[in-house]
Length: 56
Image (tube, rainbow, N blue to C red; front, side, top):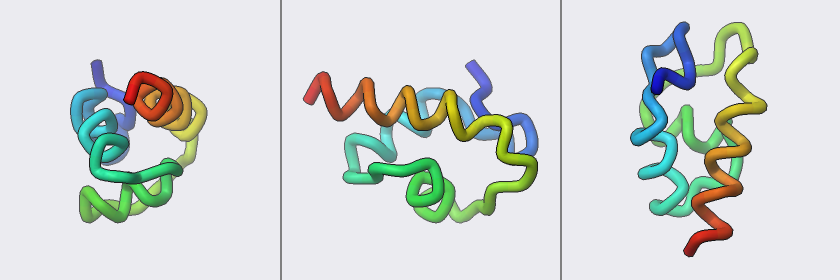
């Protein structure tokens, strides 16, 4: 699933960022070498990060 259309970030990339220690969407963007643009993906990205952290 595409999480961020503006930056072409996929769900599996966000999950990998969470496993690497990212706790916020901004941290995930930085880890992927990208910047937030419109911000519409932040809610979904945060949910994925939270889900991965809870599963760990």
